[in-house]
Image (cartoon, rainbow, N blue to C red; front, side, top):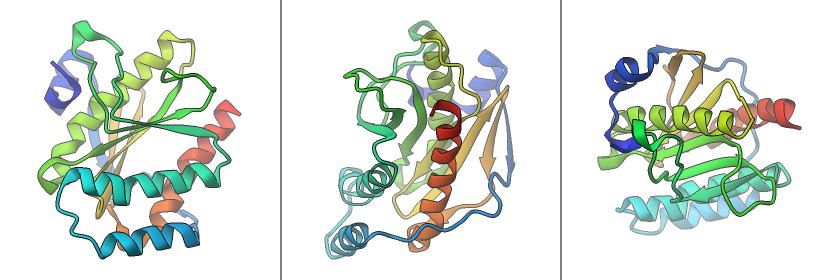
Amino acid sequence: MAYSDFTLKDLKVKFGINNKIGQLFSNITPVSTSEDLLKDLALAQKLPIRSEKAKSELIVMPILLDLMKRNKDFFTIYSGDSLIADKNKGLSGECDFILAKDTGTFDINTPIITVVEAKKNDIEIGIPQCAAQMLGARIFNKEYGNELDPIYGCVTTADNWIFLKLEGDTIAIDSQKYYLGQIEELLGVFQFIIDFYKGKLG
């Protein structure tokens, strides 16, 4: 079993993780889009972006890189790396993106946000996978002496974005979706999460 094989029911039965839908964020401050990101996204619109790989390279990664630059390398980005939390329980496998506190190490260290690219352009399909990765991130952190609660996650089709939060024994799924056309609000949510971890991790 791998992260992508999990259902929300699996997480409930195997780990006692419940799920609920509700508003995760309020009073988010929009973040102005940088000139570099605007140029990257404008260029992407001129290209035939049909595959998940193209969306990843031309839309998702530029957004994450822009956030990393804004925050002076507070976190680093792992793309396509495996997060091994507990192989025996299936909490292992490749992750589309992991944002981790940058400690200057080669290996993943202190994952704080997992980002899943939804398959078949269906954002709901990616929610259980993201939830499983968030649980994996929490277990991974605990093993290395970094007990972080909550852990955040995000599922995206590149056009649509939905956020999740694992806190205690509950996965909260945001009732609000964010869209690429609302890039300043989307960046604002990411920045809110990053600022939370800055307060936690320094």
